[in-house]
Length: 438
Image (cartoon, rainbow, N blue to C red; front, side):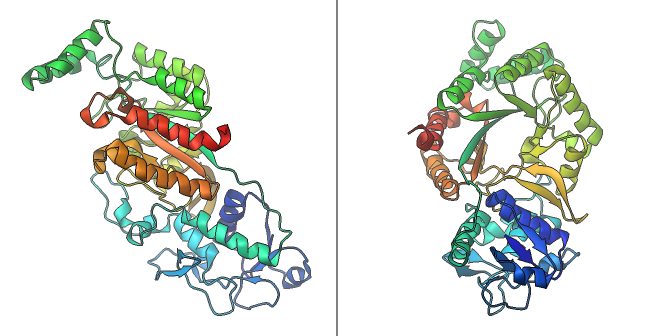
């Protein structure tokens, strides 16, 4: 695909790379030479104000030619039953600037604007355009591309796009390896006192039996998960909170022998990545220390991460991670709601809007998380499944990449609200693999 524009900017290059490389899985090139464009006989798009006969035309809005960041005037209309914005001029083949609209969503333009953070300093779904306009649960950029694909083939039936195939990766966040073990004298004694004063004698019994070695720690659920992943042939990544104890970082010590043995055990059977601590988001030196120490215990380089508490600040968090050697980042989603934070379900490069540069850091968006359903929505497994199935179906329809987030402690079913989530997890694995296994 050849794209003509009078001005080839970093923003335009990025938008085209997301659409053609990340979604269509095919090649494209750009030109500012109108004669070259006119003479070209293959599939081509004119991205300029001058409408040209016999080719695909997208008339641009100003966004991809700007260098400043400011509030955009966004009004939704519809095309092919899909919400669209950045309406184009008459004569354009499609009624909106697909490239600019995709850039606005995928580059997280709105997260560079003033917003009201939650108590953890996070950008919340209610601050987003997708939430307010009702398309948070849609991989809208993928859906736009699928609709535009039909338009391309009408004009260029021989256009060659790459193979788009649905894929799935399950990811497990390990915030606490153990419910009882490895907590140290002070925390263990405090837990026993709490059990007694709250008359939670069933928990006290479980705690004591575990500490005496007569029962497996409830949160140590890894072997059961690995068996399921092997059964259904799915890829998994375990993000390990590998930090010293703090208010929001409550795993056992990174130097505890049980931590080391667990990390090495998991590393023998699946991929282990870093789950940077809550406090490391403000301390780059701590972030680097946690990653290096985990690498030392694993004996391998770590290139993937997900922020603990999904605590991230765009663009600073992504810059820090990239600077210490992280190549793939998995935090792009919400704790409080399900759906697509960047309105896309494909891996894509991070664009640093402050610096106006595409980076080498690849962002891997996730679609939903167990604790969102449990802690924020207060859903039963049956209620959660309805939303999960809706998301799964939409990703399959666009042959996208589905990534989900679970926690090892959920599988323990220790708490009443965790009951039934093991069965739900296996149902999800059946659903996402049924086509490939049939």
